[in-house]
Image (cartoon, rainbow, N blue to C red; front, side, top):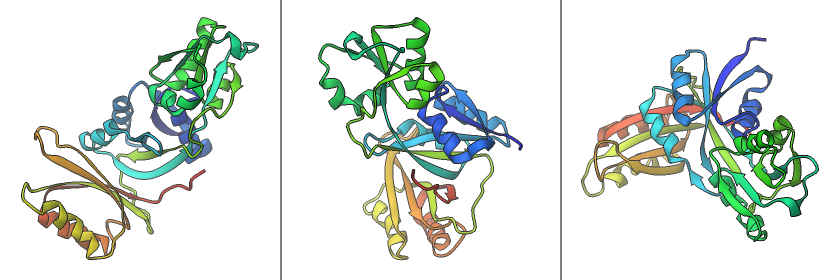
Length: 276
């Protein structure tokens, strides 16, 4: 079986790597990248490669850097996957809770465990750039007085034990990941399309843009605004809608949208992967 190269931000054992395995299965050759920018650049350089990156978390909201990178690189969204985020306190085998004085993890992961961590006033919290990297730190430094908040996969990769499992405050905690490729792959029955647009700086401009979809009874799933690079106090709107960009009625709506906007970019039409 030919392996598919898939770039992700993070280290082995991270949630992003889990999302790669969930979406691509045994076909995936997961490529660990230091930053989101590196993952985008890898997929942009290798024609047959993919990038898989988080775009939003159900608790903490959107990941704005990824939205901005979607405009900087000529990559298309060809899929998405939603992953349940289960966070655990990891330590070296044999270490007990009363020995732990410091907990390391990525800032968002620490925030997602606020209730659990607030009940441990004797523990110092330290932010780290990646959950799996925090687990690696504990192993490499042989820290018997510290723990990491990370996935069960990170525990297996780095030979750690789970001191406490499922320490996230919200048990309905999911992250949505986008699958990106140089080539646009629009399935016959794509159920979702993502695009970005900018409107004229006149009264009612955004209303007219949204009305393009309302008039055709197209369901808007999400709308997100971001600053327009190089144009202070102007904004880009990122939208997810139901339907395929090359089929009615969405195809007609996109044509109409271009008439009332100063900028429109289709980011991809795709079929979402089932939530697990």
